[in-house]
Image (tube, rainbow, N blue to C red; front, top):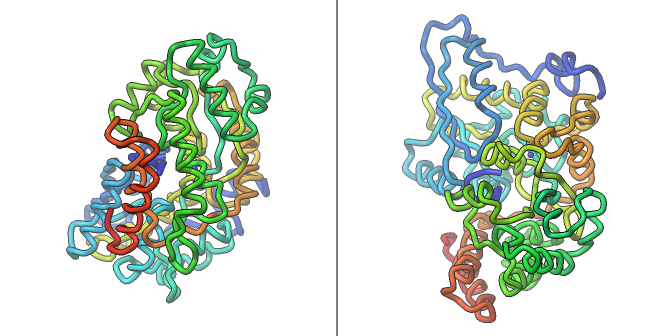
Length: 431
C-alpha cells in the first residue's frame, strides 16, 4: 500500500488452529513474557500505522486480557507516517511505542538500528525459522540487530468490479477475466474498451500502475550496491504508467486520500492492482459493494507489493510492554484473524497450509478463494532488493507521475524529470 500512501495497504495445516495459537509454527510459544496482568501500573502504548491492519479486534482482545494496558491506534497517511518516524528518531523523542514500517522503508530504518530495540535481545531469535527467509533478513541490520517482526506480505492480484465489467460487455468470471490481460499492454487495451463502452475510467491512478509493474521487475530503484538503476525496472514501470495516462483510462486519483475513497464509492474506476492488504481497504471504504468485487490474475504474473514489520523505537517509555504486544500480534491466531478480517497475508509460511487459511473465501470479494490465491503467490515470491533510499525515491517518482496526471507536465517530458528527481534523492536522501 506504496502501500501506497495511507495505507495501507490493509498482506496457509500443520495442525489445528488452536494448537498453532498456543504453540506457534515450530511448537514454541510466541506469547510475550511480560506480567502485565499482575501489574497495577497503567501502561499506554501508541501504535502508528496506515490503512486498515485489522488492529481494532486485536486491540479489544489484548486490552481485555491485559486490563492495565491501553492501546492507542494512530492510523495516518502512508508516507507521512514514515516521514514522521524518521523525524522523531532524529529528534530523539516523540516516536510511538510501536511503529509499522513498510517494505519500501525497511532498509532505511534498519540502517538506523541503534534507534530501535534489538528484538533478538528480547527473545525474538526463536521466531526466525517461522518466517519466510527473505522477510526475516529484510529487517536485520548489517551488524546483526533485528529491528522488526514481519506482519504481512503483499503478493499481487488484480481486483475488478464484475458488475461494471458486465455493463461494459466484458467477461465477469475471474478465470475469463484473467485471460484478458496476460501482459500490461493488453490490460491497457481492455481499459480502452471499457472506457469507450462506458465513458468512465478504467483504473484509479497511474501511480497504482507504476508500483505493481515495478514490483515485478528483477531490479527496482537500487541494486544491492545501493546504486540507482533508473533505466531498468523503473523505466519499464514508468512507461506503463505513461501509456495508461496517454490512453485516457486513469481516473487520476491520489491513493489513500479522500478523492480516492470517493472514487470507490462513485464507481469512478473498475480495476485496481490488488496486493493482499488492499482487500481490507476496499471493504472498509465501500461496504455497500459487497459481492461486486472479484479477484483475477495480475498482468505479467507474480510480484510483491508491500508488506510490513512491527518495530519498537528505543525512546519509548514502555519498551518491554511494546515488545510483548508485538510478539502477541504475530502469533498464528492473531495473524489468521487479521487475514480473515482485512486480507493481510501472514509472513509465516506454515500458516499457508493452515485449513482456516486454505479454506477461506472472502465473502465481500464474491467469495474469491483468497487463501489459495495469495498463499500460492507468496510461496513463489522472489523479492526485489529495496535500497535504503527506496522510500523517498519512490515518493519523488510518484510525484512526477502525479504532475502528469494533473496536467502540469507532458508525458513525453516526464521521464527526464523523474530521473532528475530520483538522482536528487540518491544524492541527498530526500524527496
